[in-house]
Length: 250
Length: 345
Ligand SMILES: Nc1ncnc2c1ncn2[C@@H]1O[C@H](COP(=O)(O)OP(=O)(O)OP(=O)(O)O)[C@@H](O)[C@H]1O
Ligand SMILES: [Mg+2]
Image (cartoon, rainbow over all chains, first blue to last red; front, side, top):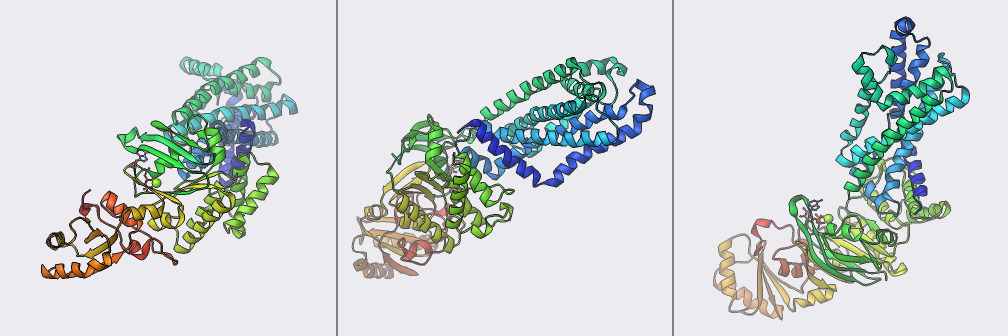
């Protein structure tokens, strides 16, 4: 069986299930928007004076995008398939294990892109603007998809390794320290030295800054390169972890 | 080509160090219905999981449809249809979607998958519910769908791990009929596991009895039963150990050469021409003052084979379905045994 074809079939199945649990996705859309709104509401007016950010709404919007992109549930869904026994039913087909797992991850990636488009679209309505124009908008959606993919693989590694739905969800909790150790709410320039250092070695910083550059500045090749480099780095780590977890399941 | 072979197949679980399957040899010919009969924990599922590539054998080798299960897992999966003991379905899909996906993962085109799913839904009687999500399915419906899912790719070998456990007699009968028909019409080799004597007896061309990970008897149901080479006289004595001891003593001169077994309040005598011996059994018991509740004589059943080999009955048997009752009504009336009082375990 062709790996790509199997992955595609299983992606469609996973997307169908995502659509069939709309309540989860409403949450994944509303919660980032809520944080977006309250952050802008709280800090927006002083942001320019406090740390020189003119368009704080545009500055915050990519945080909401990243937040939504990290809400993948592949790890959880796979542990549920393991518990229900459906995972084995899939393993009994000639579809490679790789496809069984990455169908879910790809679906998370598609979901991340859709949520990103919605959030960025709502952003436009509330005046974030979009410096890089329509193509930049598409690139932001693509970056969200790519980040969704590599971050989803992280949850999958947890889920496969532990077999526990709760552990699979832990990966999402790990996203928050990474987000708070990045310039999510203020630019790195105003950070205390230790936090600035943490942000410098935190790959999420570069993904966020890449997205921001599209919204606030236009086309900044360096920032975009760093963003994709960071996503590739995160992917290198999470995908190896997933491969290892898959192999250790025997 | 479409058969199953195993040589010294063994599984030791690392967790707990359980020797779940202990050097099994199998030779299931193409087109046979083969029943693997054994009680809880005897190693049936472990064997099925090794044969279907889900579990790596600790040692030994096995081939399904001519393919080595360790070296050619992809080919084994294409040749084998599998319905595991625990029905593994996904509640958010409909029955039709699940079958179509399964078919497409086996390489059928979209059109073929749709046709095959429709066909199988009709066969297992789920057409009317085909577009409902599986979360709303009953246990029996799930099992039927699981069976259909094992057949989407027209496998040459079908593995069924306890296909009728938990089904009511009517559904059991229809599963049996269905297994027979795919075996006859499509020549599919069937490897099924069961705890039910009647199932093995009525369905299988060949039965292997597995006990603590080893095959302790194998042959056609008829051959196994005639291996007892005798009738079975069952003397129901109740739980009083002294009565049992007295009875054994009193009957020894009468049935010196015969084998005896004591299990769940019965004394079983394996004798030739049992009917002629019964009156003398009754007289002898009378003489020593033992009053049996019942004395019956019957042709041996698979239960007697199991009892003779393992020293105890198979646990709970389902209520008998109507029909010729090839396993004999006796087998079904003997309910659960309690392990503490098994004869010579
Ligand atoms: N994953 C496992 N890890 C450790 N031991 C196991 C595992 N699975 C099964 N066993 C042990 O292996 C033995 C055989 O189990 P198996 O499931 O093959 O029996 P079975 O004949 O299918 O029983 P049942 O009729 O209850 O389904 C049992 O002692 C069981 O406890
Ligand atoms: Mg079992």
